[in-house]
Length: 332
Ligand code: A3P
Image 1 (tube, protein in one colour):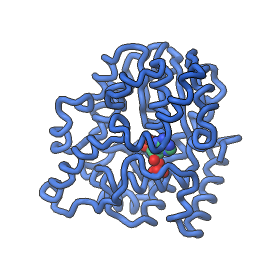
Image 2 (cartoon, protein in one colour):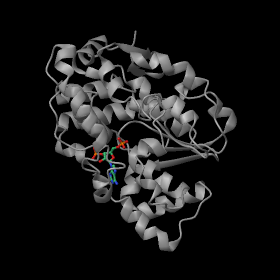
Image 3 (cartoon, rainbow, N blue to C red):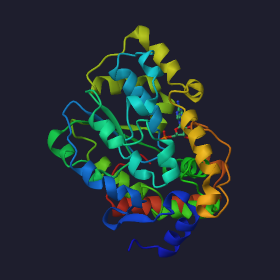
């Protein structure tokens, strides 16, 4: 059992992605959907190469943004190449395991998302791989082969707010209340589990030579210096000539309208999927929050939606979790 059974029941009722049940990892405070079971061993046993770059993030902390940044740096700012969909260039390792619905599986047939593990295995090297899996569920070879690992952190209240919108908008399909969502986030009863249990092992690795720690907030504040630091870590350089174009390419407005990264095509597929859901599950589709995947891109957005009481609850949980999990010097 996972603990917080009442919340577990709540999300079973209110998250369409969990309709087929859960896979619990109580030791690392993680919940995934049942379908992940079919991918767990394949991922653990996967071959890792020392020239891989693994981008590991808790969901909604700036994955897509840093993914595009890393891909551009690794590929010498190749705008033509970057026209291919981001899912093709830098796969989302466990994605196929997150899809339990037959309708959605059907919709993804023939795309790289049909079997993201095979797709990742066959990707030309050096590979840039995205994952939202906790470190304990990633390939065991990550520790032996020591590929480059980049992780990106985001302030937890902002991550929770971004996650709330994402879950209403995309086929995680959350139909519950906003406060209940924040409660589930605080207790780790959300897809991918606890923010703190996810980030603690990454934070512990931050000083390893093959690891680079970034934050969403520093990307917002000074993207150029993050690009330079990342390029140095990846053994690449971005010329002065290329820098301004790259910063423009990575700007919020450009990314929002860039169909290779803004998930519009994927959201279109989901729309169709969601419209078929009532027949499948006997209930109304989730209300859309009307946003885009690249939604608002701000620091401090939680102030627009969280009550003072909820902010206090988050701050208390955050300090307790940092103590419990010994996340010394964690940036928030
Ligand atoms: P918001 O929902 O707060 O707007 P992920 O890629 O990990 O799912 O993270 C998504 C979050 O990153 C969203 O946050 C999204 O808007 C934000 N984001 C994506 N591209 C961005 C950019 N170029 N600049 C700032 N924020 C960006």
